[in-house]
Every structure is written in structure tokens, then in C-alpha cells.
Length: 216
Image (cartoon, rainbow, N blue to C red):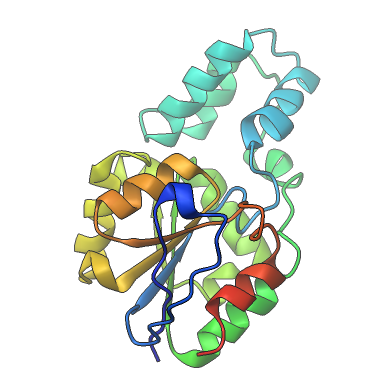
């Protein structure tokens, strides 16, 4: 079963859309950090403190640059820990600090039960993404994962959305992206996708997101 709302421009995100087109969407695509997982700024909230606890003295700006390179697949997570000077750091230990957004599993289960296809498009390190989705069992609901560390491009680069559509074999207009960053939402809409800003004043919890997506 396919469904969707038609959303307005970025400037209209605080308004609840009035028109529901239940058969307009074949795939609902979730961002990871800030949507599936509760930390929207995983670098600042989780990664930097973890690195500091393992002796890293690299400046935060350099950490951000190293992270971006790793999240583009230009280095492995093992090389990232070494380059950052984090003695004894490991993927498994770092990923233990991540938490799911409250209510997300229940919402995914509800959407999955309708038969709509679920996927993830995220700017993320490949190794960490795999660990997290296995830890939380998200692969039971989200069957397609498009991680920047695997596809070599990050949102909001238009190529990220082109790659998404091509690999899903679905036209942009029939894909709904749920993302917590306004620039990604704007870029997705510019690429022809439907997009919803999770984090807007009326859209900051999974219950509120559910109300936007229901009834179907």
C-alpha cells in the first residue's frame, strides 16, 4: 500500500499540509541520525566526547573533517581511530552510546504492515551504520540502506538523491524522505522527491510524525 502527503516549501514546513495523496508514495526513506537515532549531532554529542575519553587531542574542526572523509568511504573506521589518535577506541564501544528515537520501532512496524517499502539514506560511516542497524534490528523493517560511506556521496549533494532513485528503481515523485536537516529536505525537494522535515515545530516526535502519515 502506498501513501503520502504533499508537502510545501521549506518556508512552509511549520504548516500542517492539508492534502493527503495516499497513493503518491511507494517508498518512505528515513534519515538515520536525528530521525531513527536520537542524536542529531552525533559528532558533537557522541563522537568528540568518545575520542577525548581515548586520548584524542585533535582539534574539533579536524575531527569533523576526518569524520566527513570516513563517511564518504575514503578511509575505514579503523584508520579513522588511528588518525584521530584515539588509543583503544573501537567501533563496537563507540556505537554503544547511540540510542533509538523514542517510538521509532513502533512506527516502522506500523508502516511495514501497510506494505510500503522502507529505506534509509544517511550521511554515516559504513561500519558504524551496519553495527547500529544490527544492534537495534532495524533491518527487519528497512530493507534498503543507502549510506554515504558506501555510495560515496553525502546529502545534500543532488547525486545522493539520484543514486537513491536509481538503485530503488523508483521515480523521485514516489519517494518520501524524512530528514531532520532543512538543507537536506530542500535538496530532496529540488531533486523531485517528497520530503518532510522531522524537527519542525509541529514535527519533533514520532507520534507527531505518525499523525502526518496517517490515516492510510
